[in-house]
Amino acid sequence: MFGGKPDIKAVNIEFSCTEIGGLWGIYLQETASSCFLTYFLHHLQDAEIIPLAQEALKLSQRRIEKIESLFQSENFPIPAGFSENDVNLTAPPLFLDTFSLSFIYMMNRLSMINYSFVASNNVRLDVLDFFNECLHQSTEMFGKAVRMMLEKGIYDRPPKMNYPQEVEYVQKETILNGFLGKHRPLNAIELSEIFFNIERNYFSVILMLGFAQVVDDKDLRDLIIRGKKISEKQIELFNTLLMEEDLLGTVTVSMEVTASTASPFSEKLILSMVHILNSVDIVLISHALSLAMRADLAAHYTKIIAEVMAYGKSTFDAVVERRWLEQPPLATDRKKLLNRPEPG
Image (cartoon, rainbow, N blue to C red):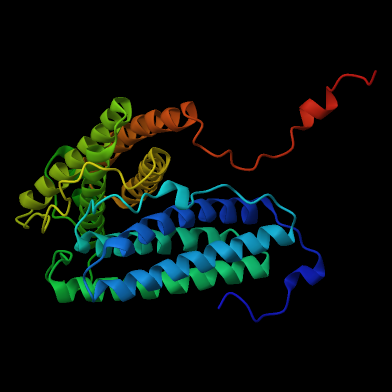
């Protein structure tokens, strides 16, 4: 795992911007995930979830070690990321055991998307092999999490739909009807995007409820609550769309947040996780917009993106103001070099 193949460095290929950006971003995400998984494992009581959480943590730690090794081989500075200093294991449980399973499910679902994206941008073969292996592992972990959630009865399956009787082609009138207000039924692609947007936002609501409950800084708490309300608004909108199609809306199984007010995570880790999830939301809502073939859906997604981007600006300002946001590696400032003062 993460080894055993010839050293591609023998051909003297240095990192390009895509390898640097991919490895740098994944390092921050994996160090953050490692903190959460370490905390969950410290408190987990469910004998079925513990082995899965242990496997997820080991994978995260191996990825961190591999990226550090790759950076060291290039004499590239290792990002600070997150560490044990961002976790307080003495704090009581903030989430119920089932949420740790939801966390493994959601993080690996998002990792599958992210790893496939960064892998497609990389051409140095050892880095490409690493990302491909990570993608394969995340796919396996996702499957294990889904299986366990189904067994425990805490997984909402996507809506079912009748199979079409024949192949059909889009008619001009069908498209026009969408713009004139008479909506055709949702298609399978649109329905799928709506379901997973609801699911992702439920996860965010639970996570941010826990965060808001333990953060002492009022400004940060208000910012987190604002994000929670944005997710709740999306859930309400998408559930309404499903109900209008005579489909049952998706509901949470349990609150999954305890009554603890002692923070298990540093405020840096908490706000950084909110910022990461907000960035992911922008990407996935934009993806849903690109697939929408109904005018009302496109309008909804456009409005959501604007709201989420405005919130993203607020979270960005907050982490920068507190000097919590690591600077991604910058290209050389050639203008600064060319305009440097003469020596002496």
